[in-house]
Image 1 (tube, rainbow, N blue to C red):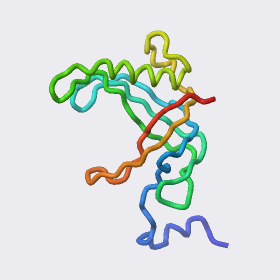
Image 2 (tube, helix red, strand yellow):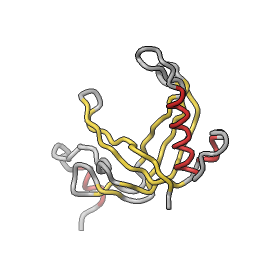
Image 3 (tube, rainbow, N blue to C red):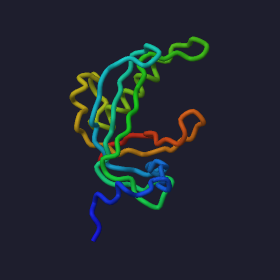
Image 4 (spheres, helix red, strand yellow):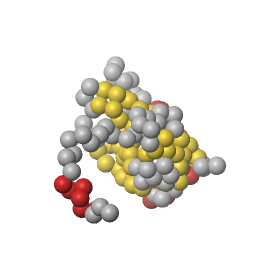
Amino acid sequence: MSNALDILQNDLGNVDLTPTLPKRGAKTLAVISKIEQRQSSSGKPMISYEVKTLEACPAHNKDVEVAAGYTRGDQIVLERTSRTGEDLSHNVARDLARFKLAVTGSADGAFMPLEQYLDCQVMVEWNVEESEQYGTQARIRRLSRVN
């Protein structure tokens, strides 16, 4: 019988380091684990949030599952303009209303306070994107209400 500490002596050169990411289109039960108002790296105000999965989901690139407890963040930027300088605040209001509806079941009333969203369950639909700068990443495609 091997000792659990034996792994510390193994050659780790052949270990697959490819991240295990949720499968594109997979829907997973999750909870809003963090939400805060802050500024983006460019100084724009935003609502930043994280979801934490409550159940395993199929993986994008492996014959395994992404374990429950996978955490991913996203944000809603509160100040947007188009490349031509057109005000896009109507898109911000739509994004806030969609988030509130998905998390609380109603878009009525003010978006604040942020505490009302903490620990609420949502369904997360995943997207997987690849880029030269960031590699392969799982992204939150859509949040929807838990039925």
